[in-house]
Length: 414
Image (cartoon, rainbow, N blue to C red; front, side, top):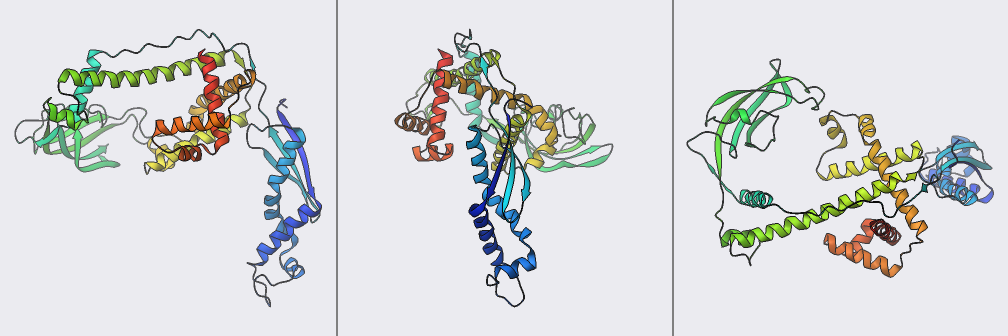
């Protein structure tokens, strides 16, 4: 057994266990249907004769479990690294005996975390990037008009009806009507949009494609034919580069194309600097991990994976997508997802251990005043109140820990 795996036995008896049983009895008796008695009015001996004392055990165990677990941790003076395994070894009217298998944080050894030899990228913005961003801005404000004459070109919007077939059989999800498809956007299967170039309003076409190997399970790698009707062709008319357009972008102080390009350059450079900083920190942490030795228990990794899955599920729910549907669409199972995510989960765990070790070795501290200032800074960054940030973090202690992590990263950067 690993050094950081602890087996701890805890017995709850006497008044604590009796009180838990009595509370459970009152709750269950209030809902019990016993002939001759109103709900909640049957004497305890009558209730037990009908249902047995065993009927009180499950809820009573749940009631005393937190207290028993706290006793287990206090007894060994350990901080758990993940949820414990809990076994009930014995239970009767007088006592309950738990066996907790608790995994504490594994031993971390680090040879060095300073002068790691990582260089920060110095971001630059090219003229091509400025031009591409300018065209993207114009495209966002483009007027889309029907193309009465002429054929589909790259950059146009083709309004289409379509139905897909594999081996002459229509498949689920392969049909659409009045679908506005941006030609050149790469929205559809590779090769689909290119085959519509040159088509005119009213044309019917058969578009032949091959599904990618990483597509949904029942279609990946298969040849398909889409029967397509072009119902309308729309073209984009880009806005002129004038003061009206600059105001539409929110730049009241911009008068010329050159001034707009300067704004674009500043905007792109700001984002590139932020991206470069994030990459630099990530590289520093990876370099620090390479100088660290730690054996991470499978249970700790599993809990991190479950946390990642929960985070993904919440993000998908905000988009109205159930996790099961997402897995089906990506042709993946939960086991596949966990296996692919395992390296990232391990990296997250080791990153935390590295930063925790720096906090410990450097004796870093965070006062309440510093934590409140940190919360204010984060609130300003995300455009919300300090109170909302504290609630989002889960309390001031978590804000303090986040500040300590920032301080540890600053040590790495030095």
